[in-house]
Amino acid sequence: MNTQPSDSGQHEVEISVVPKISDIGPRDWDACACPEEADDGRPHDPFTTYRFLSALELSGSVGAGTGWQPQYLVARMAGQVIGVAPLYAKSHSQGEYIFDHNWAHAYERAGGRYYPKLQVAVPHTPATGRRFLVHPDFAEAGFSALVQGAVQLAQNNRLSSVHVTFCTADEAKFGENMGLMPRVTQQFHWLNDAYAGFDGFLASLSSRKRKNIRKERTQAQGFGGEIVRLTGDQIQPEHWDAFWVFYQDTGARKWGTPYLTRAFFDLAQETLRDDMVLVLAKRDGQWVAGALNFMGRDVLYGRYWGCIEHHPCLHFELCYYQAIDTAIDYGLGRVEAGAQGQHKLARGYLPTQTHSLHWVADEGFANAIGDYLVAEREAIEEEIEVLTDYGPFKKVQIEEQE
Image (cartoon, rainbow, N blue to C red; front, side, top):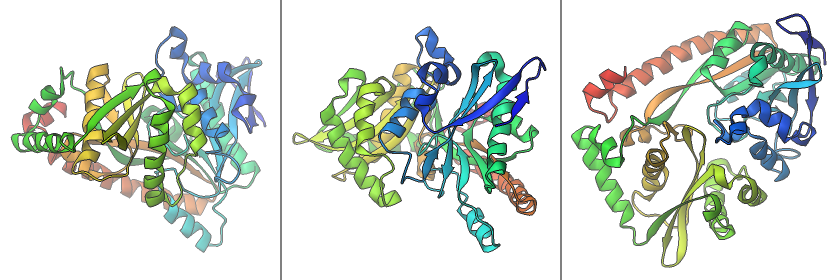
């Protein structure tokens, strides 16, 4: 692929595309994705680490037959890897959570071919994080080269579009300055206001919401069994055997076919167990429900839930309240509870902007999408304002947060 000059003009940045993350290797990838790990720290974002993306690939959760074909971008300057990006050629819009199905239908009704498209994203993962993973010593040159490289790859192959989903707010701003179209959507996140414990969080709520949450927790914890929270070496193969059953049930109902393969959880046991918190419920000697979370340096990410027995409020307990307990125990600043779900609002999770970037080859179609995104952003901002006002927190606290 063509090279791009760096900001200094002394070296050029060369962009290449590789089909396997092993062609880059863990050292070069993680030096860009999570340089903070070099200090023996937890990565800010577990989903862009080599071990997570490699587990998706090795387990067959991405690749042939999945609609997610890896096309990893690599930026090099004077032979050194200065940036990488998790890029995929997509033959559908599943597993993205930033929805463009209507765009695809409109594009194809007009006689165009929307798929394949390019997606800069972590597959099946609606969690905010950097998407253009640039070595901290080459931030501007690396980011610019990776963005231009993704667009050039689409142009060279006559693809309809490039989509960068769940990027950071800073990336959205920089990408917009480079000509990409920004999009704002929303999720529900819980914010840790330095709470000493769950009771401290409850004290920040209105009386009615506080009573309702206590009632839900009492009801859930009285389901007739025990709830355990596991991480690291505490997680054993038997726990994945149980969770796989839960995950299959939820995946079949939500998506038709579960996104992750069984092999992914075996690899998770080997390489990702320190990044995960698994909450399980057992009754009469049998695991009956579970929720899987991933942990970053300052964020707990709620990802999957499933059950084989339905008990009142057990879903809220395992997915939302246990996540809050975990965040408080580990001193984490935020819980991201996954995509959608206004029911999270009453449980302390407030609406929060999420960001994506889009490039569309057809100028006329791009202009129409750009107009739509402006109107959508205004609607989202208004909805966030309204929902926040109806949130569970005492009004004085909401005013202080604003």
